[in-house]
Amino acid sequence: MPEGIIVKALSGYYYVMPVEENGVPSVEGSAVQCRARGIFRKRGTSPLVGDRVSYMLTENGEGTVDEIRKRETELIRPPVANVSLAVLVFSVKEPDMNLNLLDKFLVHIEQAGLDALIVLTKLDLADPAKDTVAEVKALYEQVGYEVISTSSRTGEGSELLRDRLAGKISVFSGQSGVGKSSMLNALMPGLTLETNAISMRLGRGKHTTRHVELIPLDNGGFVADTPGFSQLDFLEIGVEELSTCFREFAQFADQCKFRGCTHTHEPGCRVLAAKEEGLISESRYQHYVLFLTEMKDKKRRY
Image (cartoon, rainbow, N blue to C red; front, side, top):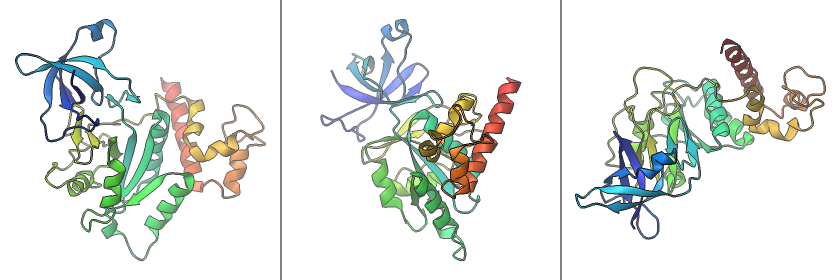
C-alpha cells in the first residue's frame, strides 16, 4: 500500500503527496486526491495536513486514506500535524523590530512544544551606526534560541536557513510585511509566492490563505502556508503556565521561597533576584509581567 503525506485538505478531500522508498516526499509527482475512510469518523478523528498516511488508489485515479501514522505533534490552530519547527520572522527595518510581539510568539511556541528558530530579515536595511541586530541576536541566543540574520536582496543567511528547513515541516509566524514570501522565493527559485501568501499576521486585513497547505521545498522540507497563529490571546495558556514559557526562568524558579511563585513581588523570589543580577534580561522580564497582567485581565472578563 503506497504511503504519502497530506499536503492539503479542502472540502472533504485530502491531497496526498507520495513518498519515495526512503521516506522523502516525491515533490516532482502530483498529489493524489483522496477521501478518508468512514472509520475515522467513528473513531472521532480525522486526517490533518501534515499527516503521514497509507492510502489506496481507486479506479478513477483518486484514492482513499486508510491509515494515519502516529503523529509527532498536533497543532489546533493552525490544524496541522507533525510540525517540528516554528520559524519566527521579524524584520530589522520596515517594519521596525517588535520584541514584545516576538516574545508573545515565543510563549505560544514554547507552550506548543515546538522548536523555535528566529529569523531576522532585511539585514541590508540595518543602520550600520547601531548594533540593534547584534544586540537582539545576543539576547535571544543567550536565552537558548537559534537566530539567523538574512537578506533576500543580498542572499545572506539563505543557505543556512535552507539547511534548517530540510526534511522538516515548518510553520512560519511573524509580523506582516517582514518579507516572508520574498525570503521563501529566494530559498526556492520558481516558487513565485504572492506577497503575504505565507501569512501569520495579527488581524491586519484578510489572510490570503484560508486553508492549511504544505508547500514542498526541494530538500525534503515543507512550509505550512496558513493563516496560522492569527490571534495570540493567551486564552489557551493557564496563568500558572506562563513562567514555564520563559525558558531562562527555569533554572531559577525551583529556588524560589514560595511554591506557586508568580515572580512579581514575592520575598525570596530567585527569578526576581536573577533579573536584578542581570542574569535575566530586563526586556524579557517586563514582557513576562505585561503578559501576566493581560492574562489575568482576560480571565476575569471571561
